[in-house]
Image: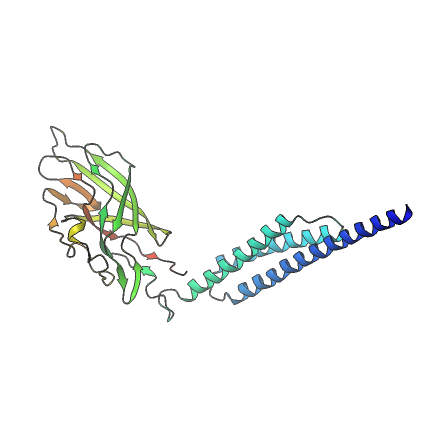
Length: 284
């Protein structure tokens, strides 16, 4: 019987040692990841003071969590595998974000790096195809509006906005045509641009509503490029020019001039202008 208990004790001790070794290996892995995190932060020479302070604070918090697990291990307490795995993944994400920020700051516009195509300059104009049907007689303020870019937008040799990128906005104001004022009015504000599954805050206003021959007239020309600042759709793909009976005034207000409501069916081409510079993160 004594030999049985001795064997049981030996097995239990072996199990405890194995668990302790496993915990030690996991902690060593976390500490190596922290070393990598410090190295990434040390390499990030181009960060702003605000970004660096934020990252340093985050790294200290990660260090504290690893130290807490080390204390638990020394006390003989079991460390949960999921806890160490999640912490390791957070440290890895920290390293990746730090490297990304350092890359973007070191290749920002005005440097000699490959970032010349990473900004949509202010006053850039391009044409987008309206996806949302709009009519000043039925539209509601704050109604969501979607449009897609018609052609690739280039800056020099860099593709910065591919054709088909999504532009999202809303109806900022609307006035239906009435018996006394037979000119329907509507203004649209676009506030979000999605490029390659990444979204950016933008300020984009409408400068013209353009009649188009439709998708069939544009097939084969969607890949055409343009220098930034050039007006690109419209002159491509069979656009016929400004829609008769609709003028665009100050602030991007669309006004019906023929005693009716502003009517913009899906497929209408809108020429839009970026009213602020848009830095793009194109790293992949």
